[in-house]
Length: 341
Image 1 (tube, rainbow, N blue to C red):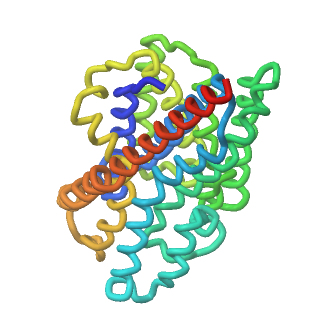
Image 2 (cartoon, rainbow, N blue to C red):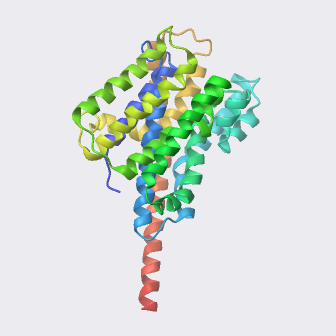
Image 3 (cartoon, rainbow, N blue to C red):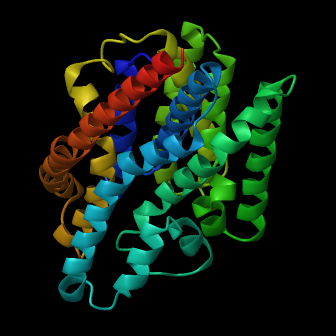
């Protein structure tokens, strides 16, 4: 799969929106939509990778699971260890082992939806949504590709799951509709549709998508917008805007702003930034007394360097080791084929 720098830039936009939302920056009251952008992007990238594997001999499910674990789990484990070390002093009322267990097993999404666990690192709920998709999608995608119209089936799934989220929000509550895998996987499904359909977007459509995303970020901060609408219509608008942008950027890899070096680098740091920023908001501003822009500056000064450390000292070495092992495995298989041939 060829590298697309503009998609890293879009990932940077999504994480910056989320950080601004958590720091209560004025005008970013709907910054949680950045997470929906990330879900669409994740669905697109993972489906594209799996499609490439499927075309070249089939999906190696075990290897896919191993790659995802090596990519995501080490930095998450560091976060959990730091939380466990600090919790007795900073969050003594937390059931820290319960939090660690829910985080490590990717069950925080349903715990927040139907229970009330300590939420000091509750932002990891979104990883639970993604991991359940990663677990199921390599098994379901080959079956879907045997259908006559796989995109039509995915569109139907997106419509049904979106309707399900609306029903849950209106009849049970926003928490059940927002945090659960079954109600918030819609963006990832839409990203999978983008990977399969490969649609080309016109410039006016892209402009409308950008305006729609900007309004989605800004409007939930207005007093007349109810929280129920924030987890129904706002999420859908963010997902559709992200779908248009992902389809467009798939064809335009060198979009100047998104493909610039700073945006690419922030995009590469996005996973680490997401994991660390929420914890340090609680540490830096436990009583929520700092001005939002001051808090944002301090969070950036802490979480960005930590994310860079995790990228360069954890993720990159693991990636290099994985490539070496893959190259050795290919050499061994080639040698075995020569011997048999």
